[in-house]
Length: 95
Image (tube, rainbow, N blue to C red):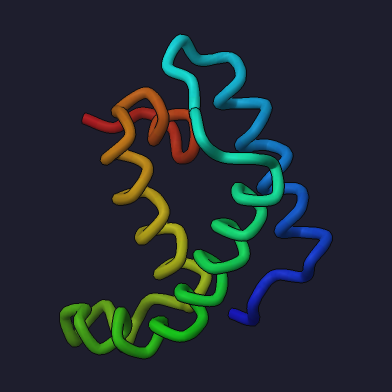
């Protein structure tokens, strides 16, 4: 999957800023520009390391999952690291 466009990255940055502003735990020491730069870097890292991620998967997953399915799996694992509710909002019930 190709890197996101700058507009798509800005959408994520805006969404994260709105999400974090609703939390009791605030983000300090970061401006909107800092958050956008972190989104940009994250997207570039994902693009630069997708081959490494694919290689690390079991052979069956490498061969049978589409790139979109691999991306969803990666995102689901990362989302669960935030919280079970967070991943449930992404993919539905997990048990």
